[in-house]
Image (cartoon, rainbow over all chains, first blue to last red; front, side, top):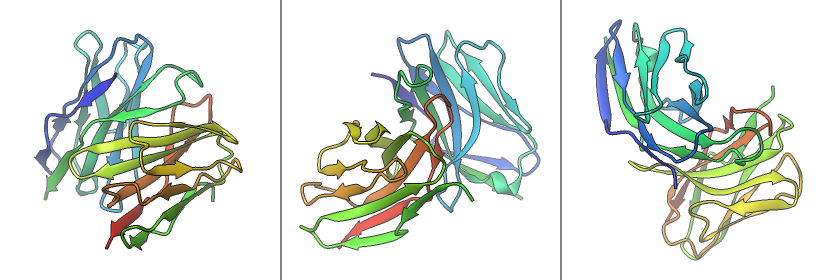
Length: 118
Length: 112
């Protein structure tokens, strides 16, 4: 079974600085997707960024970027120029396969609470 | 606006009672999911469905039941057999050939 581990229950960062959230996963599959979701106090899950395992290039979305190390099964999220609105719980998630073959089931890590200090 | 609507936002249940959580989507998505969120455990999959009238158990299906009579609706019933039902429940949906799942705003269930 696939597992996702986030070893940092809590992290903090000063506004405008950079923070990196860690995630490791375990799978025997070669075709999969990885995601970072943000859950603010409203508890709405918001997709931050996704990475396809077959792509060597790390995904980037504005201030958010990932460091995807497939051999090490590591998928960290870097938030640059942190803003107060970035404060939230962040979840790393794994999904096996493409299209309908995997049923789109997500396996989540335990989450990391990010605090942003002004 | 297109999206996923979960209702109610807060729900209280007496022990021994069944309760049904609503999830409706107008995104024309085929696949729908129910997840449970507990503190320190992330989200865990309860049930999922790819098409109408078909659904499968997830990792923690015991004590729960679902139905998928319409494409846009996927209600979750928390039965009295669920030993620890107090949790936050999230519904999600996805277009079959799309990677991204969209989530509702959740229902907080408390057993009193």
